[in-house]
Structure formats: structure tokens, C-alpha cells
Length: 259
Image (cartoon, rainbow, N blue to C red; front, side, top):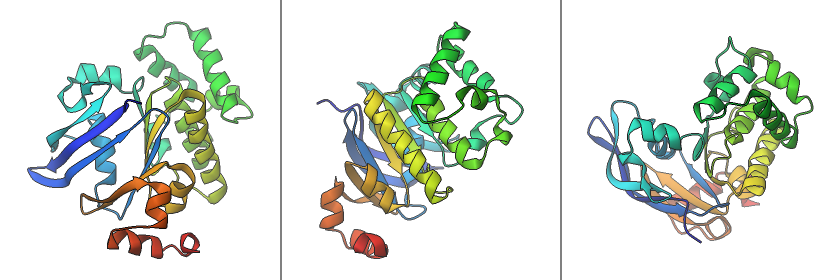
């Protein structure tokens, strides 16, 4: 099966200083890749490079990020707007901060859908309520009518996952989507992402410090340290027989995983 997204010897630099070095991997439709490593290892930078969110000082200085045969770093801002959302969706660590606090969830999601060509407000309402219901929301209409500040942090995060899936993206980039949540809400967010894979065949790139989440969700695992890949392979293989000393220490530091 062809890879839906591929990183090919990617370097990323800020102000001319290379922070991510020679990263290569591919993800097939419906596959989940977990990216682990300590803070500052370059995990989130990899996702932001694909979305063109490196800011004015960041740049992919070598290699390519391929999405359906297109080189993402070479696309114009207008071309990226077409790809982002409908082709590649993103969930941030704090979904609540990506919502406008003075507009309802419905108004913000409708604006997003209009930007990607939807003109039928009634159809949007039906699709949004149906998706929210499939993701386990008990009162989809109430959620859509709510302002973000009326929702708990966990509910905001769950709404962020559902919102990212409204456009049925083929790839979902998830940047620490469970790190600020309690255990019960973490479970709900994980279930939503797995359901997105099941319903739509979505490929997921998951950045997380939580190796337990990777063990539950990911088919493959990439371990990063200081901007470099130190280990890459199937999750079962990496966790059962880690080859790199850093990976061994990383796994040994989590008692539950060791047992």
C-alpha cells in the first residue's frame, strides 16, 4: 500500500541552526505512528513542518515532506490552505486555545466548512451533529451552541478532535493531545482518535510523552533525542526489544511498562 505521507531525510532549522536532523519515515492510510522523546527533541517540530507552522524563523532546509505526491514545503500559502484541514488535520495540545472565546462552536466550525467550499448550512448542521454523536457526545446540539468557555478542558479537547475530523482528513497530526487531561478524559480522546481511524481510514501521527498511549494506539514508533531519530520500528518490537540505549532507558523509566 502506498504511503499517504512521507518524511524523506528532513532537516528543520530555526535562524539557520538545525534542530531536526535527517528524519525519514512513512505512514500508510489507517496507520498510527507514535513519536516519543524528551522535551526539546523535535517531536512537535516535525508536525509543524508538515503544516507550515514553523513561523518566520523556521524552515525545512533539507529533504521533503510528501503528501499524496506533493512536496508540502514547496506549496504556496494558497495551496497549503487547500491541503490543511481537508487533507491534513491537526489537534493541538490545548484545543481550547485554538477556539475563539466569544463565538460559539457552531459558528467557528461553520466558518471552517465554508472556507473549504460548503454552502449548505443545514447539511453542515446534520453532518456536525451526526459526527459528534458518533464520537459519543450525548447532546451534540448543545455542544455546537456552546461557547468554548462553557465547556470543560476535557470537553474542549474532545470537541477539537471531532472538529478536526469534520473535513474527513486523510492524515491527522496530534500534538500531545492527552497530556493535560485526567485519565478518564485521556481514554475518551484516545477512543475518538481510534474511531477516526476505524471510520475514515485516517492515518495518525501522534506526538506524546506518554508511552502507555503509544503502546495502546500506535502501529509503529519513532523515538527522538536532540533532533535525531534513535529508533524506529513496529511498536511491539521497539518496546519488547529496544536496540538503542536511550530507548532502553526511556522504557525502563516507566514502571508500568516495564512490568
